[in-house]
Length: 181
Image (cartoon, rainbow, N blue to C red; front, side, top):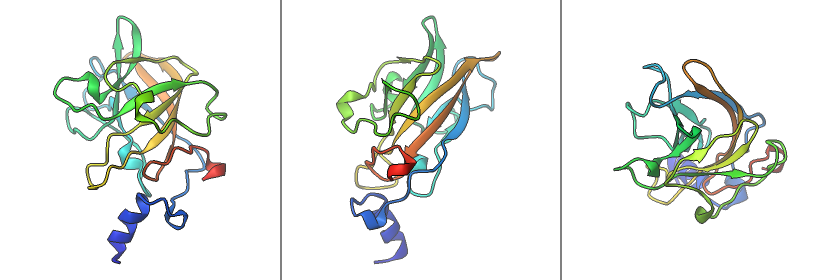
């Protein structure tokens, strides 16, 4: 088996010898309001890029279709916007608020039906959200990356959400605790 094949199989395998560890520390980032944020600043998060040795990354929706959730403000307040909210984009990624603190949430739902994938999800500061990525477009097998997001703040002018994310870099892995990877 070639090195690239081993990497791809390992990233999507249930074989524990191929498991990437859950990062020890969450990644902190921020996203700007999709409608009013400054040009050049990210408004969406690409969770799929966290597969294997990668990191989830903030992206600009007008420059790439490679993203899973966006941040926006509406009359109802701050909201997570999964891809299915937008006409013309496939319903593929999802997000849902989960009970507990960022530290206490060690597993996120693996069942796709538990995620909201086609309507905005209200954001609450201090709340924790489980996120499911779209299927990795690089692989022919379905591969979703799961993570947890803790909202640190929603503030500023222009408005932005500051958050931390801890993800499982293995396809279908729902454990989001670095102590149990």
